[in-house]
Image 1 (cartoon, rainbow, N blue to C red):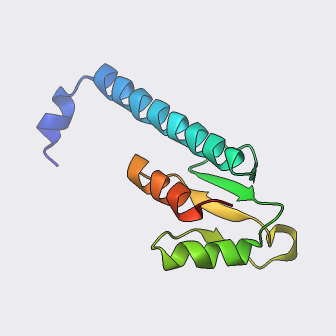
Image 2: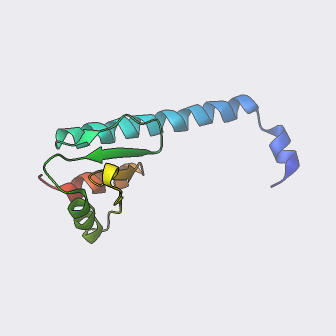
Length: 106
């Protein structure tokens, strides 16, 4: 990267841009959590770039396999304490909607 260009960038612009990105991310994460809760998921609080969620009536491994068949990748762990949870990354709005669509009617 050109150092002269970096030196000319107003740091206030960078801070404003970062705030806009993180604000959008927080909105997307909350929206995703709300949609999952509407489908009966328990969603743990998170300030990370992912949601940790489980459905009390559906096996997490089965849900992960169903989603994978549709091209939606979520992380499933086999450790006993978290075996029924899915780690769902926050993606683009289109990717987030693909997850919700992939879950269909639970």
